[in-house]
Amino acid sequence: MCTELNDSKCDSDNPIFGIEDQTIYVSCTIKNAPSDTKVNFSWYYTTGERLEIDIVSITLSESGTFPVYSSLSAPYEGWPEGDYEVIIAIEGHEDKTVTKKFEVR
Image (cartoon, rainbow, N blue to C red; front, side, top):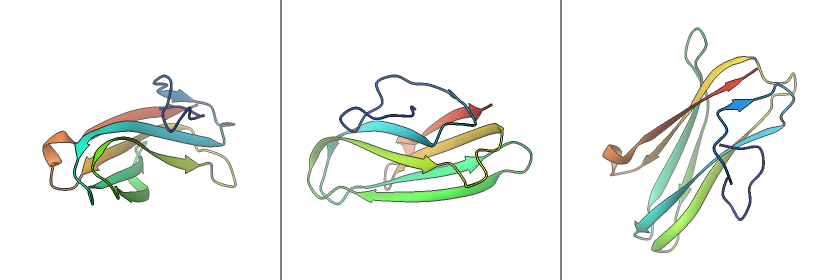
């Protein structure tokens, strides 16, 4: 997780963001994927009642190994402080689902 991508990837994993950050990215590498592999990024605010923010789906057009990413832009009023998570899931491979927790303060 990061606030800036380098070649479609985060250079480091940052689990803490500031309320002034404009965009939050999550990236991963999908290895040996067949063409038409669908990757879903589900973003949630988890402080108090769990609220779905957005779901982003990416379909790989070619087979191979690729970096993929999703981003979430700050709301007009700025980020609400609290806990968040993004769930990265490959359709048909639910055993490989990854949950990344992060915080905005």
